Length: 416
Image (cartoon, rainbow, N blue to C red; front, top):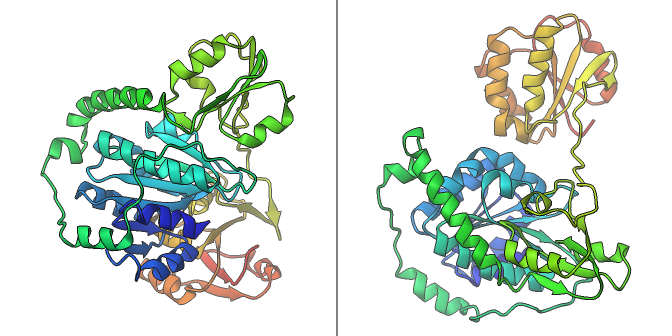
């Protein structure tokens, strides 16, 4: 699927593509000769990739990020401001769903348009439409790409065929970056945020109107019981005489289309992910008989133990375990704490967390997994004043560090 995503983007004239997936990076390397106008990078983490792409779109470049749906959550800081600042060149964030994690909640949360796409035809259509929306309304657009080999449909009315690579290359060789200085927009400081907020609300309503006629939204009328979903697989759990509204535009929901569907049925089931992104946008929910499928995971007090240590894992984001361990240790100083993280997460958000830990003389055990860059991590930590480093070859090696009196770091090649 990676090559299909990359080709679909490049044939729409994308100049800058950023990712954190090395397989995507290798695919783009293979395509570089065919599309020499393209610049791509494999960034250290999603936050960096998103910020690089966002900056390119400020300068009128058509840009894209290719993430996993889970990875987008690691870039929430810049994502949450990007709807306000907007873009000049079109900007798509294509998130490939490889786990159960979905990006549908981010739409209402960030006010960024969200389009879902199942299968290659739908993805091509969503990229075409997504760039049209992004360029017209100067806003980033999120696409959740869901691989599905069972989907066989071509409902999209693509107005223009993608240009050839030769034509694209000659066109972009003559283009230059453009950037108009406008602190009121690009800075998005509190002084200007209110005006940007009003403008954003107006954009969302105009985009909602555009979504009313999106070819990816399909109504199948059969019976007086209906389903609203963005997954074709949802229909497998219902009888053949059920009417279906396949709603690819998760945010903002095209309310006229939804209201028209609701008018033709007596009862409606919502078949969406663990967060009711569509349901919460429907004003009149009288006919919706299913309970909202919140499915929000409750975060309980950590109970995992290992060799006498309370284990703190990444539950709030990359390297969050370090800050969590520090906080727990300060509240319960007698508890033995083992925080776990990955070396890539250390470079993502772990460095300031370690600085804070050392500065405040916190005492716990940090296990860094991965170890392709063990020496580099160690050199950086030494610069922060940390001196206690050990490498373990087996998980049982953790047991030897029950009596530590200083912040101590263990390196392990693998995952525990």
